[in-house]
Image (cartoon, rainbow, N blue to C red; front, side, top):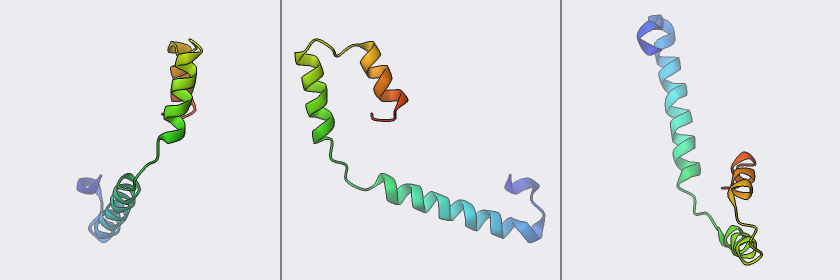
Length: 64
């Protein structure tokens, strides 16, 4: 993308990419608490309901 950008837009694109990358790094570096997720998985396991369908459901809802 940058290689095709006109010179007057190049720096704006580079700055935008850097800002997005910094935001992603900031969000990804936050600590995450998976306590509730672990409890739910254990409950499903105990009820013999931890299966491919349950995992697919979590993935589709971005819960994992």
